Amino acid sequence: MAIALAVKALKNKEVRKIILSRPAVEAGEKLGFLPGEMKDKLDPYLQPLYDALQDMIPAVKLKEYMENNVIQIAPLAFMRGRTLNDAVIILDEAQNTTTHQIKMFLTRLGMNAKMIVTGDMTQIDLPASVTSGLKEAMGVLKHVPGIGRVEFNKKDIVRHKLVQRIVEAYDKFDKNKLRAAKKDTSHTENKID
Image: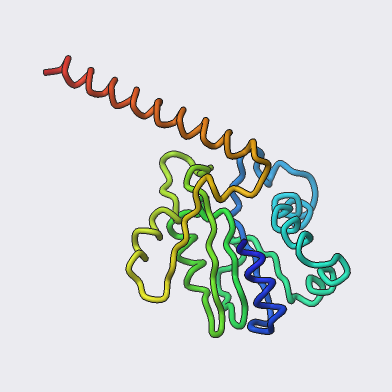
């Protein structure tokens, strides 16, 4: 949905470019272990962004936009120092940003620009000791004028209908696991008394 809004703004000439970014946190392999130059390492990682663009823009036009930097795909690590004007800027997978990364990203906002930050708090791939930047930003920026928030639920899933059932099964599993952990903690506290 975020990319659809950005493409619409570009087509309506509300902005001159789209900038897409993601934090360099993976669910599995690290970029450093992949063969090749930086672009070779980043292309597979950024593939979900390419896929979404290819669903909305004809291949020839997309190639033209990419070659002319009308559409830019930039890893979050390369955002520092930039001011992003006249653009829709999307930060995808923001649940995997650190608190410093998301603050750095959000402060890149320039004139005639809009930011869309997406993330799923159930899919954090950061180490347990690291606070999700998205989680913190949602609290810190809750009452800041000009910042909106849209939350989706299971009914908003637009993938295969089985995905909704998978999400529901994991939600139920996680709730039961949390209940069991609370019960174990309560039982331990009673023994100590």
